[in-house]
Length: 120
Image (cartoon, rainbow, N blue to C red; front, side, top):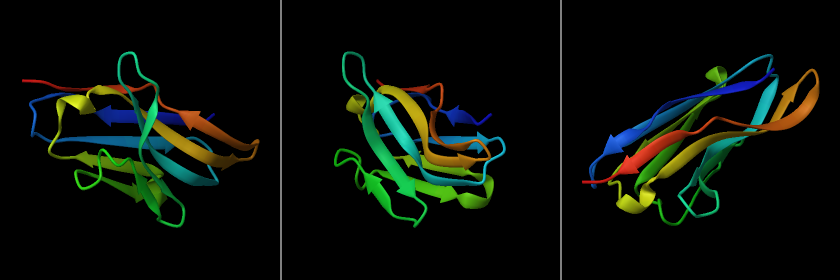
């Protein structure tokens, strides 16, 4: 069984920084894409950033230049460095692993979510 273990998050003042990490564990053969989505209260879940196996990275326009996503393929782990945080970055951040290949086939997985709150 594949599990995504998230760490990081918390409370930070506007302009501050936080980092998130997400490690995929289990009998994984390969992962096509990993990244983060977020959901603010009353809003739909939206993409924050994702990186695919070719090392191509996509960012939401709202976080470009402030957030950096990196991936350690050997550890099946992604790291999201968030700088210059704004109150509108507040939300529940979910780790995502897409196109995960195991002996059972291919599937997508989500983490439990970690809270990021930007407030003075």
